[in-house]
Length: 348
Image (cartoon, rainbow, N blue to C red; front, side):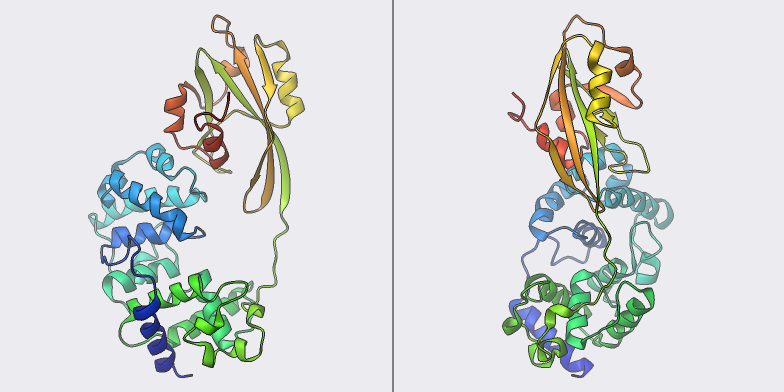
């Protein structure tokens, strides 16, 4: 299949069957396109839609995002996961304002120098906003192209990724790059699924080499598989006079910059620490939380200090901590499991 034929089919399919009603479509505003592209990294569209709307209400321009505190940004991002995206989003906004006068650079090469904007994201912004003829290669597009081309290079190896990049560039059409780019994204998201791809609905089915070989799910090839570890820790939910103790998590590390419950190395360590505290506590059901590299079991001890009791010295000296009311806590940047635990009615 020629470059022109593949692109023409993708473009025609996108115009007839692709997604057109998403809130970040129909705009050439780089700020809005950038925001959507960052949010959509490793996150489903259905999840992103609400976050995207709330973010724009709070930060309608890159200048307002740049002027905000990181705490405010993380609070709005809370629950969306992969928090390094939010930190880079904030850094990028400040750099765009400080170094580019609040206007995003107009080329993919310049965009890729900004914090958190890789080659594929830069190309998407440049194609959608500036009409640049630039190739993207996010996870969905890798899958589509690897199957169409029966690309058997191991995408765990950088040289093979570069070979696929070269193929993606070669396939770019001369015109309608924005439609073509959206079409590849939509094919990967809605038709060319990781498992059980809907080949009968695909405009490229007749020329898909992986389908012709009867094994589309063999592609893309990626040999390296990370071994997921496991971790067990304990959280302390301690209240005193209707205020909850929260601690800001250190950077670098998991949930860096977010506010969380004081964490102990183990339930045994927390039990030993609380042995002489006034008041009483109870263990809540364990929380199981999956992160990229490990499964995390968090045992939570809910402890109520008597209103007139002295706060234990160990809690007074807890690093980067604050006593806050529950309503204030819910408005802060929290990890997803704590956000769920803090929901009204969860603890009785």
